[in-house]
Length: 129
Length: 411
Image (cartoon, rainbow over all chains, first blue to last red; front, side):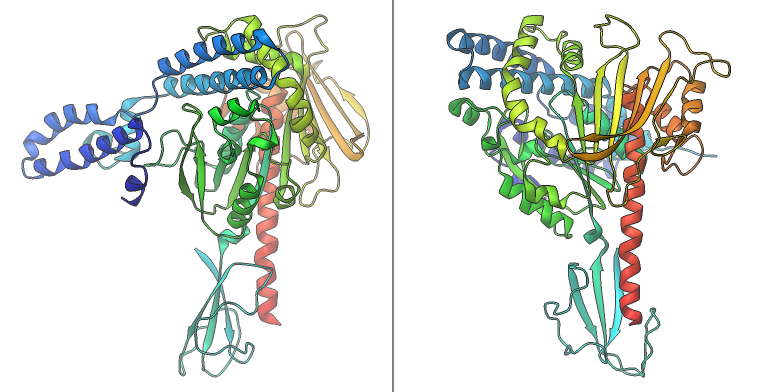
């Protein structure tokens, strides 16, 4: 819980992450006494909660596009200036981030992600003969 | 888990209290615990005495942290190399659970990978204002980098800052516990001399300009807003800083993986078939270079022929000693690509000193990650081999360090 408090006030994304995880911890408790409700209702609630709060790749793509325009503007003046070079460096950094986000998105199976954190739940139990 | 050696008070002049260690073996981080026991004696290391106080000195196994440095420009395959390396040790490396989702750190059972971008002293806006790229040493805090790597190497956990690549801001720090193997990857692992001295092994990925251009086109053309011109402009703009600050690090590396366009296809500019050279420094402790057939000789080898049939353009190997920036090196070079499993196993069976634990381990590792880029050419092969050499280096270092405390107690 110490980590949660230290992440406060940094960015809305991080706050949302905190909210999501508290939602996850509070949801399970009322259903301990009503196991017949557990699977169906918990299942539907759970799906809303799993989603990791990262910047959606679309916003990164927008950032890449914007940074390229800015770099072209900065370099229209003096191509060897520090501003021009720094602007293209930013383009490179954002392109790399976009490519990593694309790779991450490719491998994102919501069930696998959930089961990594909660292997003991019914959906994630594995049976070996 | 800790390695504890037991001393009796006859051998140490310490009183029955917990104090800062007056006697340190090999500079380990130690905690001394004094047990006052009468009559009952529990000593495992053979020190015999008639009861009396025993001092148990524990040194954390983590103080044997092996530090590996990996340097390469952005978009040059560091992430792929990291995944292959952590896979050699077993397990997948993942970002720390429950922490900042944009953390750059990867953690597996044995390894922790730290991205050196986290030591940026200027965030994106700061760099823009000063007109400085991330490649410039002025944008990086080398003092903090040195202190934290030194702390992790000696078994102390640190609060490492996080550089968020998406927002371009410096996020609040995350706790990093000392792992068995620490990998620091980024643009400047070997730039600062103090950090360089902490590294047990260092690798530099040297991608030639043509190949870099081809890889970046592959990576960025799918992005809206990018065009061939913008990709080219981005590479050209960063080149002066890259040549001035990043490229010189290759002279300090213990192993350089150089990627060049192929010589087998005249006029090829697609960059699909690659010529990869593994340049290994001679005389590095715990590291014996890979060789082909006869160590120290020079030879060219084309495995395709009667026993093995390959498709166009085939595979060509070269091995020989050389000098690289004034250092004695051995260079193993592969040009071409693998099309079939049996080509890979055939090549593996003819390489020596690859530090595998069983026949076919390299092939197995390559197949495990057949979807990674470079899995069919020298980049994947040499990255896998370097990963196995690092595992061998780690095992040599850890066995030599556990051997010495045993000798100390016998004395």
